[in-house]
Figure 1: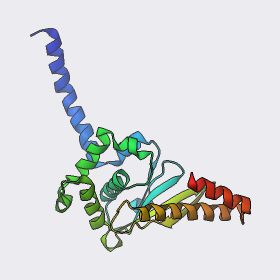
Figure 2: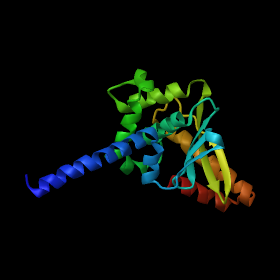
Figure 3: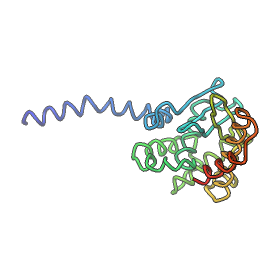
Length: 203
């Protein structure tokens, strides 16, 4: 056996446990995977009752009444962001093996076995629907304007379907948050302001 083979075996033995530990760490905390791709975008607030994913000054927010553990809230948030969030720039991240693997690891957890489905997206839909029963966790859209936080409810119809109705509702939420933020910080808008906001929303 030559030296190269020996060194290759040594590396496999040494690195295997490290890689396994990293995989286990990601499975136990999926937000680490999200933060790895989008640094400084995930925040847990209010003693674990609020999780925000804020990639661009706006956020997908997840509010729990307090009867949900932080790990479960993280599972919910990751599955929502991976499968259903409206941020278009997430598509490239979703195509990465590591991001998909993290979603698959969540869906494979024993507590979600009743949602097993050939379609991972449908399985995720089932998990989100089950976890949100009874108002245990709710979606909000958050916008930060000049240090001020503005939040509006974000309630997707029909169990987390990515439909035209849902996209329109979310666009309306973003528009309302933008408008309320401007009114709060700048006073009543002019007609020129309104036209500018309309163009921004269309783009």
